Length: 259
Image 1 (spheres, rainbow, N blue to C red):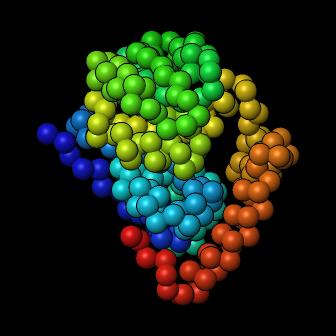
Image 2 (image 1 turned 180 degrees about the horizontal axis):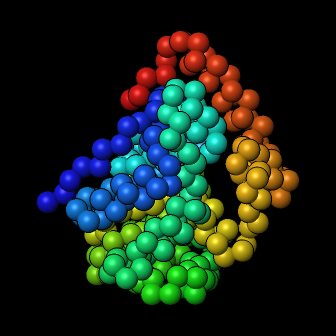
C-alpha cells in the first residue's frame, strides 16, 4: 500500500517548490520507492517557474508533482528569505547521480527516456561504468514531436513489460513535465524524473558550469555563453521578469496563489 510523501512547499510565484536539499530529497525518494508510491519528480528553476506563469496547465503539473525540487539558486534564495535555511539546490544532474549511486545493490531498475539519437544508449554505458551494479533495463529515444499511436503503443508495451522502478526523462522544460503528467499513470513504473539536460551533461555533449558558478547563481550565464543562439531569448526574457514578479510577491501583491 502506497504512503504519500509529505514535503513542505515554498510558494514561488504560484509554484510550490519543495523545501528540500539533496539529502532530504533522496530520503523522500527512498520512502516513495520503498512504499511503491507512484508519481513524478520535477526539478524547477527560473525557466520552469516563468513558463508556469504563462501556462496554467503547466503550473498545475508542477504543483501536482510528488516532488518539485529547487533546481536553481534563485529558488533557494527565496527559501532562505522565508526562513528555510535548510533548503539548498537539488540540481537535476546531481540528483540523478545520487539516486543511481544509492540504488545500486537494492534491486531497483532504471529506464532512460529522451535525448537525441544515441544519447540514451551512451548515457547507459557511462552510468554503468560510473556506478557498477546499476541496473538499467532499457532506453527509448523519442522523436522531436508528440508520439504517434504506433510509437505510443510501443512505449507502453515496452514499459509495461519491463516495469522499471525509476524512469529518467531527458527532455527540455516544459516538454518533459507534460510528458510525465500525461504518461505516469499509464506506464507501469514507480517514479518518473524530469532531469532536462542531465543526459547531455553526463554524456559530455554539453559542458557544465564550474561549481562556483552553480553555487553563485551564474550557471545561466555560463550556459548562455556556451549556447547563445539557443538560450539568449530564454534568459533575456525570463530573468528580468522573474525578478519583477518576485519583488511584487515579496511586497504582498496578489495573484501568486498556488493553484
